Length: 346
Image 1: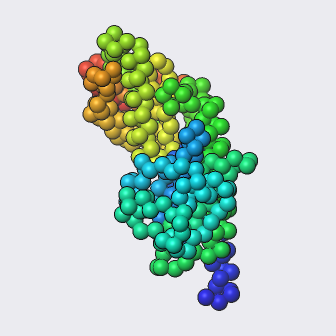
Image 2: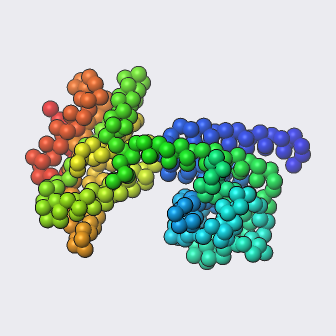
Image 3: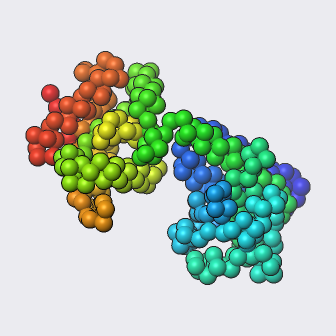
């Protein structure tokens, strides 16, 4: 590769880094942010795999938060003490490393490869640092086509790591202010603010918008049989199921806790068809889920009411009308025997 080609390649990579940074600043959904970042890192650095570990400050351990690559799921249960392995060394010392041959580096943690079946030949590992505080590490593994990572790769990867650290800290501060820490869903105040914003966006652009309102069927029975503590356990578990489904879709949908046992989901850009599909997926996932309260299995189901634009545009003059229609759709579910989903009908 001549000098002109090298320069063009560097410009192309820096442009891709800028594109990644633009996305990092566009959303506070940490899971989506980090997945997109690692995808871009793999592409720009031309690596076979990439992963990000966050620091559990209380236990002083690193755990895999996001992993992209072959057999990545098997790594999710591995935790490294600070100082253990190459990632642990980077977290402890706050310095990046480029390891050309991991098999010859005494810091290399072989158990990760043994668990996943992946063979790590080389690695770049960079600390995630925000205001002198280590948040974790980010790493790329094995340059494609048996090539070696170089200092140019390290420089570009360091830029991406710095942006990732800012995104992680922004998301953490955002969550502290907006998340209901009992369920992990957004608080009602923040959810309503987002609903209002998305309704205004619909008015300007005409892009679809849908709202789901869900209610646990016969929740009083759960409280009566298992007590209020048991009811709280059920709510937390149910919220986990909802978040799991939303994370799988990789859309910008958000969920909130509207009331005691009433949850809501905001779906920007989603029409009534996609809203009903998501509602059914959540409903069936909860119906199949095994809830254990105080060592006993509890059967829990939910009903979901849906309002959507432009489907209900003649009935919706304000964002509050979306709530009203979705809530009334819940009554359709109750008339139909509960454990179902319904789009609002006159």
